[in-house]
Image (tube, rainbow, N blue to C red; front, side):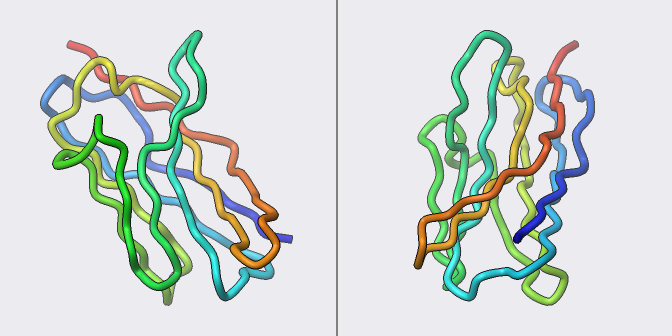
Length: 117
């Protein structure tokens, strides 16, 4: 089993920045991908960014150049740095880990990000 716990959410003004953290524990598979997703009120959950165990990163077009995903292997933590935030970035942000060998995935409980003046 793998457990994920998000932290770092909060309220910020447009143009501001925030860093989210996803702390991973348990039996972490060697080959994995950790992604950040978000779900706005009334909307569907969408992928924001992904980082693979080898270090490759991918981003949704809507956040390219504004969000950065990174990984601290020693601390088993994946970060999402959000900058130049817009009101439309308001959502619950979730962390997800996929075991690339078995395709089994795990979710965290989510953390709220609110962008408002």
